[in-house]
Length: 434
Image: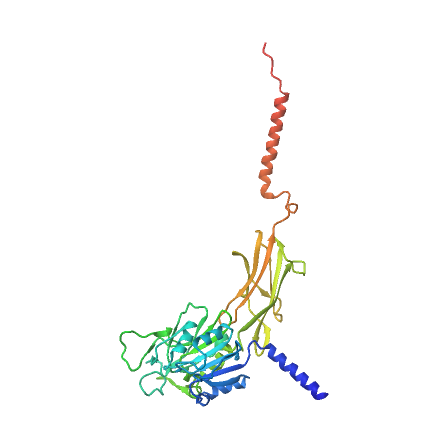
């Protein structure tokens, strides 16, 4: 009896923990060779220590399958197979795009042997990698251990200051691989790691001539983060070695400077926390509205009513949901165009509830109470509630308003003039002429 009770308690605890997590831990790792399990063991062990269930498979395995009866079997996919020319089984690059469309998370690391399938997946997400055989080269910011003279083992400290993605990691990272180009105006993309102003992407075996380098300077993206409109996430790294044991443990030393530890390990950990939704996940719930002085919501309001709108906004961090501390969440009251746009404020420091009180527009019609919150690194929040605004009834308007006083005066003065004229006309007698 006690054993059954203990098992029941344990099962309920496990289910409660799993229900709190915003995403699962089933992760598929696709590789060119199983040797990656040893050369990148630090990175993979860190994921396992955090609870991820890793399943390894060759990218070109003829039995490769990502779905079962139309449902994907994994929550996250890691592609450490840069040179794959064709995925095995019925898997194609379109399969991974569908995986993202279904809300799955993707981590892709490639190198200068990049194949067409990897390039197609990245291109669909707005990341354009350079051609096969090219490297990011920097003749100023390269590591002292790069004795080949190609200066393809570069050092970069240009880490995006987006704490929710990079976790405030600062320092120098080692990178050897292919460069990418992203549109800085794309709201779905963040360049996590970029090259210095002296970097460029080209083949180290060819002299620079026409065509010019694919990308140069600070536009050279080394690692990019992507978040789709359905809140699915993907990270694209031009270097598979970035996640290797060698780059995790190797010190960084550039010309004329002392050696320091690379930030590859902490940056890789922060990136995986973000891309696999351990961090930066928001949820909005319990949205409600009511007239000031009342507690029950109304299906319709009148123009100029004072309305209170409130919603609970929480952030998933540290394995649990906590109140989201922000002062830039806006409510819009929209009918074709926004008539009201106001910031919500937290009710108190310990509550997840954010609220605002406003006066309904003096325009009747069907309005939408809209909350659309989009910030780099966070999942997007979108809430909509359609509410009609009615005009006053005929007996609810004010009888005399100040703005109409001149019209009242003109009407009464006209009546007075008519009365005086009528009196004079009726009672005036003309004198008879003799």
